[in-house]
Length: 72
Image (cartoon, rainbow, N blue to C red; front, top):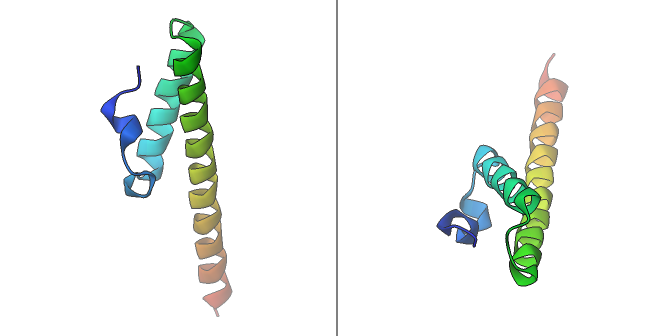
C-alpha cells in the first residue's frame, strides 16, 4: 500500500521529493505484489508526479532563460 508521502499535497513537494516518491512507486510496481486496485493507484500517483516534475523543470528552464536574457 502507498505510504504517507504519497498522500502529501503535491505542491508541498520539492522536485527531489517528488522524484524520490516516483522511484519508490516504480519499485513497488516492479515487484508486482499489490492488487490491481493498488497498482492502479500507484500508476495514477506516478503519472501525477511525472507531470508535476515536468512542470517544475519547465519553470526552471524559463527562469534560466530569463536570467540569461537579462545579461548585458
